[in-house]
Length: 184
Image (cartoon, rainbow, N blue to C red; front, side):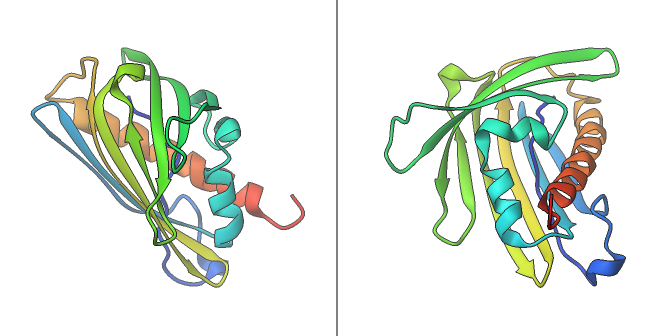
């Protein structure tokens, strides 16, 4: 399973918002390629949320499936090369997955992460993060296209991944909210 550290969407008043309120989580599969779209909101300001999502050496604080994360030496002065290692199980399928991504700004306040195939357990992949802020609420939209370099059962894979991603998304949102709280 591919664990992704986050993606968030906004709707309404901070006092009535709960981080685990996922607005959108779609997983599509076609010819070995997974398309993932996630949107949810975090009752926290944009600046600390973005800082935590780009604190690549400490991503495990956001999600328990991330067992290692580190910044690698850059190959491009405009990109940050990040390696993450995740461990997770879905039913009887367990995986230890390494991803190396080159992360760049998208010029609009968000960022893109491009999989480095030879260093990852992915044949290819591209993810986009977009942020919106309204008062003390941050909305994040995450869109990804990934081609795993390992087997996922095609008939049940998308459903299993969607279920597991929802759990990880709620955990990530709760941790973002908790860690972004004033005085933390």
